[in-house]
Amino acid sequence: MKASYTDLTLEIRDQGMYSYDRPSAVFWNAVANALLKERLTREQALAALRSKHARWMLDAHDDLIERMAEHMVRRYATTATLRDMKDLADDPR
Image 1 (cartoon, rainbow, N blue to C red):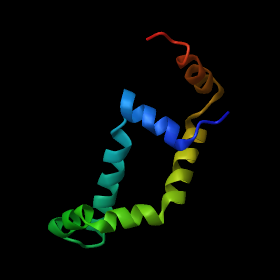
Image 2: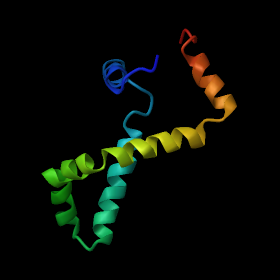
Image 3: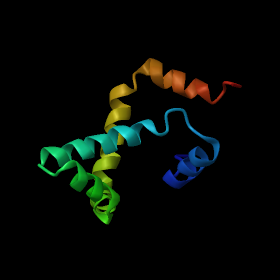
């Protein structure tokens, strides 16, 4: 049975995850760089990121973010890496 989004993210939040913060840092740096490319000043970009506009942007693109994650998994997941991932659940570490 496929675990729901909420089930997994609650476990990740409570138990930790290797490199959990990495996608967030990459994503928000890319957003900041895109704002600067749109000719916002550093101060304007920072204000926009701290505002509700950042949340509204995410809300408007949930489907795009989800498809990006699925694309990344498909691109990364070879037979060998999938086997390794499946074996991790049996690893006592």
